[in-house]
Image (tube, rainbow, N blue to C red; front, side):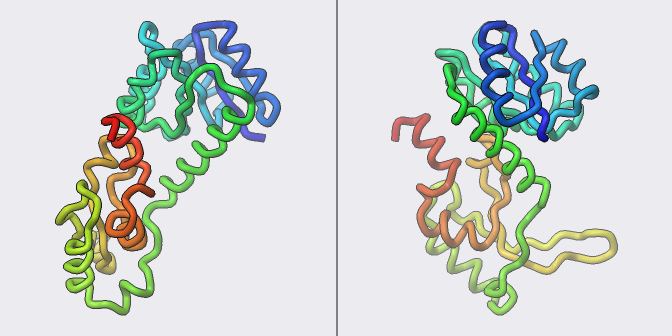
Length: 218
């Protein structure tokens, strides 16, 4: 069973979150950030749920600590009322899930599940090169995707990627480095099918565009 560590300085909120998560997970609680960090190596949680408000800012402080120490445990941030404006900052720091207090059992458990899936996907690395890329002239494919680009953040950003790994280069493939995704803590690199279907197809399907539109009121 997945272990979930709940960190929140407010005892009533922490107890509530622990109770909700315990319906599906093994749960431990930290009364504050220091206590939570001490528990991390002992229980090795699969997910951390942490509170974030304007005073203690435990979510941001935890994410910075994890970034500095190269810790990959997925984090779900639970914002107190009015703290949701800090979501872009927590995204940049690598949070994998976001909720606003109060939450119910379904919302919390779904956020935990989604955070684990997002971390697993990030750990897996880029998708395999598609058959279409292997059969196409990549220069033409690159040109066409840049010409068809519908997302403002992807304008003229499609390029042919090949990296040196060990003593040889990887097979060339289509890639796009998206600064908008990086701004919201999402993987910067996206690949052919994502570019075709979202960047040059329907940008509204992209999580970064959705977050940008919500923030700007577009």
